[in-house]
Length: 232
Ligand code: T5A
Image 1 (cartoon, rainbow, N blue to C red):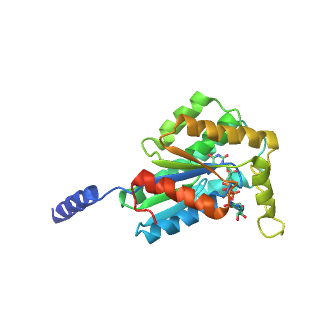
Image 2 (image 1 turned 90 degrees about the vertical axis):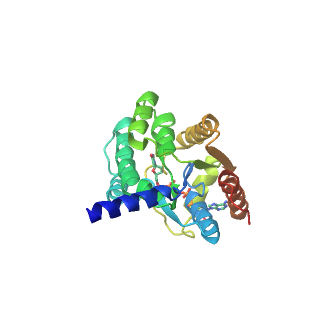
Image 3 (image 1 turned 30 degrees about the vertical axis):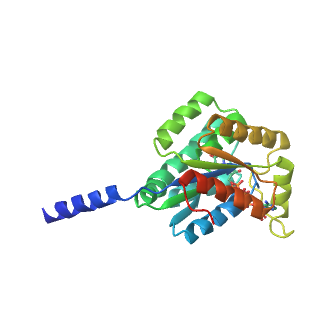
């Protein structure tokens, strides 16, 4: 009886706490998502906002295993929809195991990629059926949609050059997705821009060919405006 009352009080307190905010970063390969997400986390911390930085595929032990499996580059040829299902399985676990509980605790979640990546990579650029992907997204994501998505837009050749340069000239590992041809990368870039146009309330496009500091400032400005934070 006492346990039940304690549980009820805890639920009431948690319910009264403000839910955290969910921000995603999207874009082609090497556009600077990982770099900018860390910089945004620093800004939020300075404002006393506790956030968790995560990534897709990944973020939970199961999803990280799926990541290793997909990005190892040893999969035999397969249809783009099969690939979408693998990413969706990882995402389902990521939402259930990390994103939703973190938001419910009142903490913010910053994710390096989310469901727009499946729409862009497996759908628009990869050829998977659009309406099947929409159904899959509904099933996987449900109401756990990001409130703000930063789309980093970059000319594909520059993204490639950045990946090649990463690691200070040492040989770097390029996953099978990063190794796809320029035509694929060009379709991908357009796919993200189309998503941003279609969801213009949620998505803000930032020109990622600018300096690191300029991109950082523009990202921060979008966050300040969207969540009515104090700039600085
Ligand atoms: N995928 C993923 C799907 O196909 N479907 C899905 O549903 C999902 C979720 C994930 C792969 O999986 C695919 C997409 C991906 O191909 P990943 O290893 O996580 O693989 O790869 P990416 O997400 O593409 O991340 P990358 O690490 O390759 O690129 P980032 O994070 O965009 O770029 P970042 O920050 O590492 O920067 C790259 C380099 O550029 C420099 C950085 O210092 C770094 O060296 N840089 C800049 N240099 C100059 N000016 C700037 N403004 C710069 N910004 C960054």
